[in-house]
Length: 66
Image (cartoon, rainbow, N blue to C red):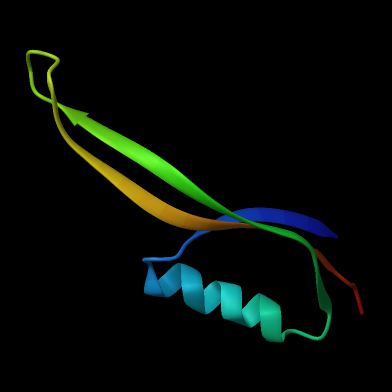
């Protein structure tokens, strides 16, 4: 079965899940890409007040059925 997920590299939970996939002998990584998600926050007047960049790892993998 094929899967796709973006893992937030700043999240301990996401990185633990990513490590489980990497260490699972039934899983094969098909494609991996480092991406950055940009978030912008606006005031009530619509003026940008803050922006963040969150690094993700976008992973495509296949898990073999037993």
